[in-house]
Image 1: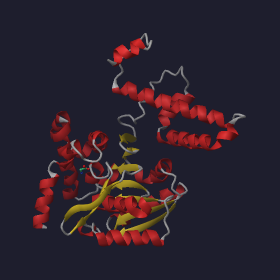
Image 2: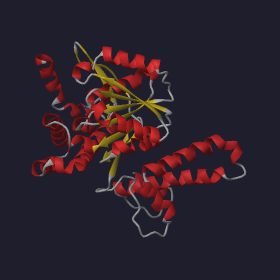
Image 3: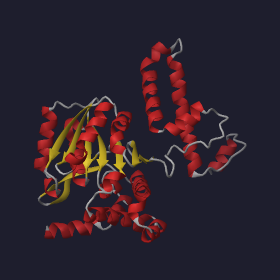
Image 4: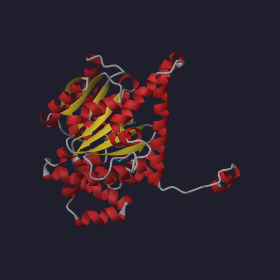
Length: 347
Ligand code: GLY
């Protein structure tokens, strides 16, 4: 029917595009609008529209930082360039790969090595926040806290660290309340942001604090476990536990950015690493048989960025279709529901 309609509207030459070609076209056309806006800043009639032009200019510089390759190809190499246009996603084998989650909020998930040292520039590109409160537990903070603060400050953000005791037992209303009190004492405003640096407990709790403080402020997920990178950091579920059960109080609150530094997963204790392996197998079982077969044949540790990327792609696709878990997203709970029941009974 679309074909017939397009012809009736006078489109003489029609072609079907692959998903990759579609992404390239979108990347190209969305950048053109920014270029026109930027050119307009210098035009004589611009003063009437300074706000709009300035906003687009900020978007343009943000996109340029997020995807330097595409930027260079489109605007420096020029239309005659023989280089293949970028898909808007980082390419396989590059230092940083990016998967975009397109749900009620569109945000990038960056995956690669050494990303904690780049968290400042990447955070500045994803949010306009002036200050960043880094929330972490007392195991992770000594390992990565100083590096994260240094990178944020180098990018011009005012950064500080808040630490709570590590472990699932901290994921409760008391720790959450203390964190909110701290945010209020620090006079955080809606123009500031929170960064969750750690595993799933940290991400869930800092995310829930961000979702509820002043009715919602920006937050960044910086998962330091293979499990959190592959599941809980993506999709915007935030929560704390009640004595009656896990995750009984929470909110859907999408982050502005997820930063998966795969170097941090290599130093995890074996059983903590295995949590991520289980999550990976789950994704293979529910969504991608070929991925599952591949996992059986190759050591996961040697392909961590590619494995995390596939996990994130599978999760992002489900979240884009059913963000609020009215149907398909329940698939992601495959194994979780039973495990939560066993955990609640025995722990
Ligand atoms: N961990 C399952 C989900 O995010 O839906």
